[in-house]
Image 1 (cartoon, one colour):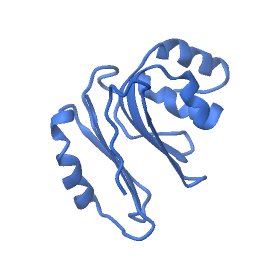
Image 2 (cartoon, helix red, strand yellow):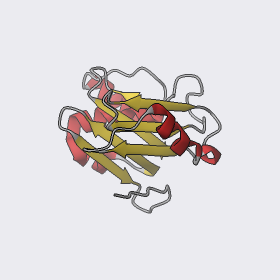
Image 3 (cartoon, rainbow, N blue to C red):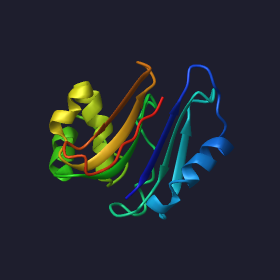
Length: 151
């Protein structure tokens, strides 16, 4: 079970040390590595503690779209991801990993927030669309994977 951390602020700027300390509180959720993404101005961060199950070598997160405009972190598993991925490949999308999590970016690019209509499984995620300045987070319909949001 992975650990997700998203930090977004219009006022406060955060640094890597602060985000790293916060992510360490989730260390029990993912001994398989960690990853960080920052907007550069310190106002947006996505961080991930990984429990490696699918694509042990290539599934590091945060995941980025090819143009770097969409960034996401995912906990859990998307069911039928191979079928969904093959359909997206036929539509012209390409993938860099074998991770099930990577389909989220292409589904979001194709369907926007309605990508949820195509996702089944046990999951939670945080996605940041830099171009739209949109933070989009969700979890599976049964709430199996936790997602806590505070303001």
